[in-house]
Length: 508
Image (cartoon, rainbow, N blue to C red; front, side, top):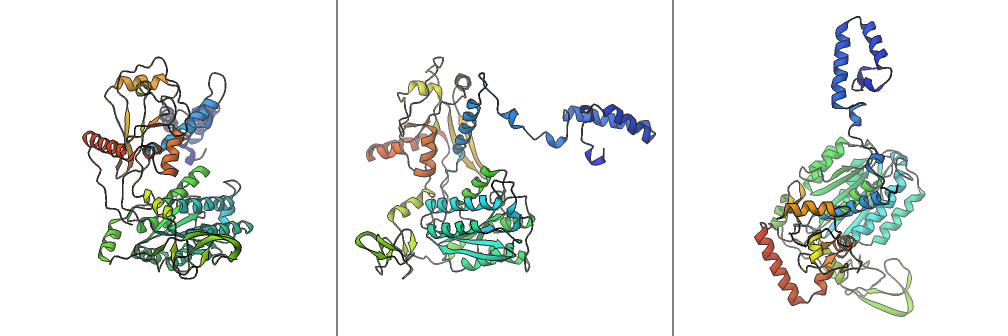
C-alpha cells in the first residue's frame, strides 16, 4: 500500500497481519513495525475503520429508516416536513433594497456542459432552470429588466437583449435546446458584453450579473482582473453558480464586486435541487451596500416615468406593435396609443415602461416582508378552538390525550445577525417543551400562528403566504379597525419581549 493511503485502517482487512509481517521483514527493523501498529491503533480509536475522509459521508440507507411495518412513508414524510420547515429561517428584516433591477443572466454553453452528472445533462438542466428563473424573476420583480448572454467557443453570444418581457427571454432560451455545447467559455468576454448592456442603466436601478458556470477554466483575450476592477468601479454585482468545483477567478470576481462577501454570492452545487435553490435565490433583490448608499446620496434625485395602460377588447383583430401578431385585445400606451399584447413591457414606439398597478404593488414585498409565524405547540393547540387551517380548511392533527392544556407554549423568534438568520427559542416551562417533543410522532403540531391576527394555518398555507401571496389571509379577512388594534398590541408585546429591530430607510 502506498504512502498516500496511510490513513487506511488495516485492521479492517483480513490480510492486514500478513501485510504487516511482509513490511517488517522487508524493512529489516522492528521500529517500523511498532510505529505502524501504533498508527493503526490510533486510527482505530479515531476513525473506527476505513479512510478518514469517509467519516463525513452518511449513506442514504443509514439516514432513512423503515417503520415497524417496513414502510418508508413515514421517513419520506419527515424529510418533506423538514424541508418545508426551512422557511422558519427566511429573512424578514426590512432592508434597503433596489426593486428596479437590471440583471444579465450568463449561461455556460461550452463543452463542459455536455457532462451527464446531472440528468439529462448539465446543458439541458441549465436551460430548464434558466426558464424557471426567468419566470420567477419577473414574478417577484415585475418592473425589472433582464437579458441573457451565452459563452461558447471562446466568445460571448447575445441571446436576448435587456428587456422587461419574459416571453421573449423564454423563447430565446428554449431555442438553445436544438444546439449542442461546444468550445470553451470566456468569462472576460461575457463580463464585457454584460457591462456594455448595463452601461446606460440609470442610477436608481441596480446592475447585476448572474453566471451559471460549468467549466473549470476561462479562455480570456486579456487581463480579466482589470475587467473585475472595472465592474467594481461601476457597481455591478456578480453572482456565480458553479456546477463543477470552486474556481479561484470566480471567487475573486464575487469577492471584489460584492464588498468582500463571496460566501452568499458564489456557491457550488451539490445536486439538482441545490442547483435550483442557488439559482432562484438570485430572484431576491440584494441589500444596498454603504458604497451604493453614499453614491445615491451624492447624485441628484431622478424620477422614472411609468405608464399604466388600459385594456381594450376589439371586435376585429389588429396587429400589436411588440410582436406584430393579430389580436382582438391588448393594452394601449397612454402616451402614444400604441397597442401591446402583454405587460410588463416597454412601449416599442416611445420607450415608456408599461406596467399595471398590481405589478408595482407586488414589488414592495421585498421592502416590507411578511412577518414569520410562530409554531403552535401541543398545550396551546389543546387550549385553542381551531380544529382546521384558516386558509385551506384542512383539519389539523388531533391532540394526543396525554397532553395537558396547562403550561406555556414555546415560541420561535427569528432574529438576523451578521452571519445569517438564527432562531431563538423562548419558553417559560422547559418541562412542557420536553413533554411536547415526546408526545407527537415528530414533535411538531403542524400549526403556525400569525402574531398579528392569531389565526392558525397549516405548513402548506404558511409556505404559500410567505413565498407567493406575501400577505396573511387572516389579516386581510379582518376589519381594518381590529387589524390596527391587533398590530398595535403585537408591536407592544414584541417591544416588551425583545429589543426592537433597527430598520433601514426604504429605497425605491
